[in-house]
Length: 220
Image 1 (cartoon, rainbow, N blue to C red):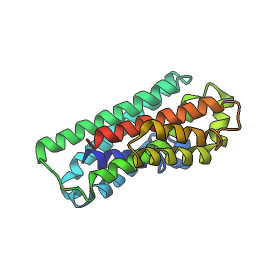
Image 2 (image 1 turned 90 degrees about the vertical axis):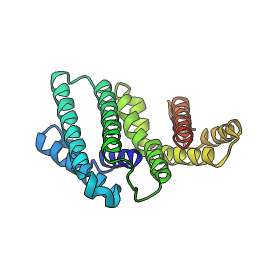
Image 3 (image 1 turned 120 degrees about the vertical axis):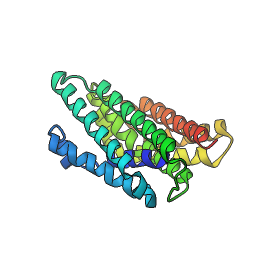
């Protein structure tokens, strides 16, 4: 069940955190809406087990609300802090999800999932390597306006390239060959242009390889 809840987190915290919410998230009412979206997505992705799991998921959504309120307070006190609050915020969310899943396991035992956890792992991995990394990298390089501009300009090409590279890694057991082939292709699409092309290329290959390793570890 932990993989389904984690997938719900990434869906709700990234593509479903629409600009309207993001622009106004410093207000508590919008943090409430955002936490409600998290709860709704979790209830959907746990399937019929929602009848038993909803109290745990309500608690998790409440914890998400408190974490985001604390992050807002940090931004008010230290407006120039950008990267650290973002990273810490996400790490605490992951920890809260793991604790909640362990709590569910300890009190309810095994729970039925609406679809194979493997699909949740793969969906989470592709979402992270393609869209979540786009958002994360944009935040992490805020101090380098020229690189951030390239991140935004190459949004679709780099996102699709990362997805393609992950597919290549999953489709073969010959990792060095796959990485070498993918690198030779991706040096021309989309990285041939841009001042920071090598930084972008190496970053994307590193992120994809890290997610590939995560998949291998998660699936045994």
